Length: 323
Image 1: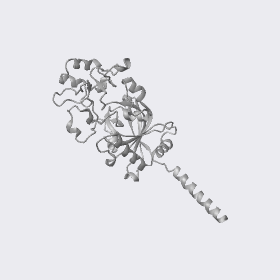
Image 2: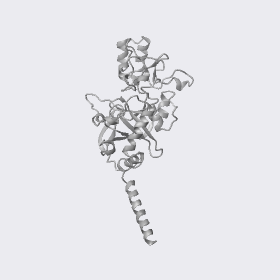
Image 3: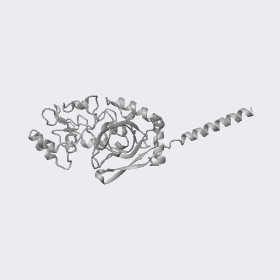
């Protein structure tokens, strides 16, 4: 009997030791890799690079922690020709149709006034003057008229840096909103675009359009949200996600959507969020881009990485003890 008790005690001790080792095996090796300017260059965000993950063919993940502003490009309700500031429904909740963004966010230069858009709108969108104001990288250009694409109810067709469906690039100019990544349904983040003078460290590390990402809210809520890189934005801005990504991080209902511009800011901007980014061609999501396919691929990648709890532990141990 004493031998049996001794053996059981020894096995229990061995189990507890191995469990303890497992509990402390969340070393991700996150070290500062580079920084990116934010808020127009007035602040910076650190980007960390982790150890190679054998279950992901030696991929070395990136991670950053930042608050998330709201990107609306790719939605059918982003910009409206008459609701230029996105405030119509703020002052009159029963009004329709209403935009959820300010038209200046679709400009080549957002410092220009709303009146510049009003002027080209009232003139029937003369081609040369219109595209001096609007960015053809944000608002789709009609392949026939060369004017901005608009829907029958007056919304401007807003684009994303990639298309959601196979063959979508061959359809640019057909004014069909559905070929772009839908910011209302497909969770995605926005990374700074690359320019000749400002190369992208994300691209250099293998994180590109449609790369899988995972967002993590702080420990108080511990929400895990699967997404992709769905758009590119200003060079000196980082920390932006679309409506679908922010909605999930904030725990809002799946069918909830902003009613106007201020509502998008007040309810959909997420607080401090950790973003885990998976580099490499294997972890670029194939089209079509849908919420279900993003979730399925993201869940698989995170499981091979080691799961959510590993990420939280690594952040607390290696980056921010209070996260």
